[in-house]
Length: 157
Image 1 (cartoon, helix red, strand yellow):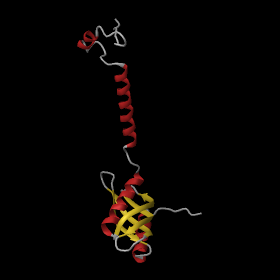
Image 2 (cartoon, one colour):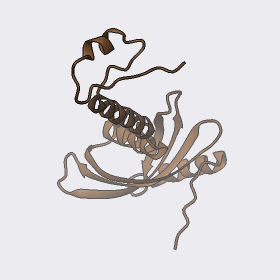
Image 3 (tube, rainbow, N blue to C red):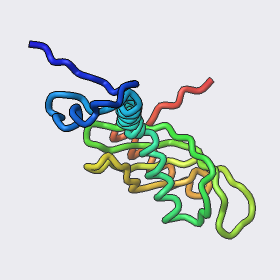
């Protein structure tokens, strides 16, 4: 058998009967239905876009490491190329644009970093060296990344 559902559009005489028996009828107006649909769409969109791309996790890990361990006041920009292996180790090459804490001006620096990915998917940087500031340490990290096969490839023009 079918069920008759009444929507209170223009005739407001019997809304109490419809609302009292909520298991058999729908007690919402078309405006409420539209609001519910919009909320569901927003929830779906949030679910899709809440997850950040992995590159953002890499950038956040590098930025956190640089701000804690170097005399950097503010990170202005960060370009990275990374490569990871099955052991959750990661190698990163990149360019950092920053403001120094003690010297005025904006600086750019090439860097290389070695790190790992923890259980939460967060990137933790273990070692980071700048090419101009620490060339020997930079070369050491490069050799380590080559040996572990996590040195990123840069295809030039």
